[in-house]
Image (cartoon, rainbow, N blue to C red; front, side):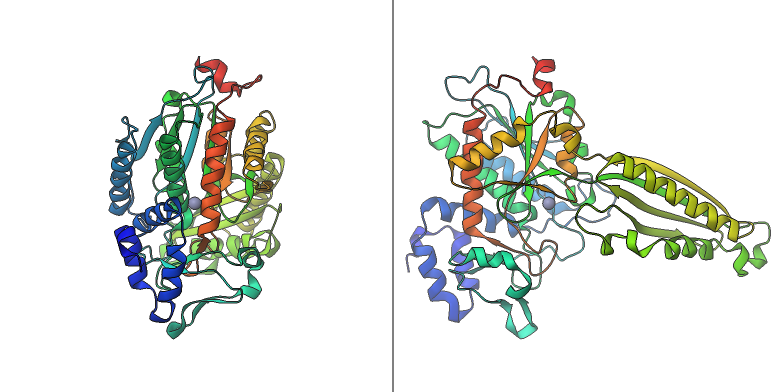
Length: 456
Ligand SMILES: [Zn+2]
């Protein structure tokens, strides 16, 4: 054992390994490069901080997010990014000045990841476990409590033979969504800083909070960002770049019962509860998130709060195209109208709020965003394929505020669950890709993304 070589995080990881695996884990670590160990230590360090988002009404929604953001500011300054700061709007911002012969004219590149983890699964303290040199088959996380990753239902594992796989201990999520993205960006910055031969453009780094609540990008001041192109590093799996996401509109359905005859509320005819139930129950099962896949749109009912006199239903309308979004909104309106006619004395009002538009509408005007990512991937031997992800709100926020953006893979699988896992080898490939991407964007482009002309 070469414990002296290891950061405290790696020693802790070794200590947490089940006795029967300790030798194999030590063996895998002993053969790892310094950068691989550094990347692993970063991830273990970030994962250990509980940053679970919650509906607390505060910003950020949980204190752990600020703890991690402060740590990241310190580490960014340690890397030499002297302007790193935690802005008042709970956003870590830092700039790596451009290097190379074209540094004056290279576009400004933004890399983004979020520090929070999903509200629906325990967020910590996360004890990372390393499953060395994946031999195939199921991955047992905790045999005594029956937590394991079934290989038969996860075909991606076949590509990870021989990889070191990271999981939590079965009691929490792993938080690779999106701390893997954070660690990969930090490691890429560390390499870019250390290797003076590497050219890169001005890189702005943003680590957002409460992305899982859908408000991660709200803190970003797009007016002062002065950026030309952005990549969120928040995609699941390996080798994908998300270039499409759903158009999403929120809706609020306000259902009012008849207040004039309070003693009769229990009568079906006047109860807002019954009318609301009819709205939710009566919506086609084929147009719900659980029964749609791929490019099919749907309506999601997320909450219904109130009583028999008044009840407010919240939800979202989702479709890859704005035309489909409008059609679904009309269908929902017709559906509510029909319910209103069935329930005498009930009044139903719907309001629709714009949330997100498919980033494809912007990216098709800026094909260089994907083309340069694919070129960078080729440089490091990764085949990068475009994908229509269902979600990608942060990248879409950039797109519709003047900065074309796409979402790059960072490697996680089974996100928001106790079986969340990631390959350390894939994390390293993500670091390679980010460094190559910086190299590709170190050159100006003949036709720059629209924002460039406005900013200079
Ligand atoms: Zn995420």
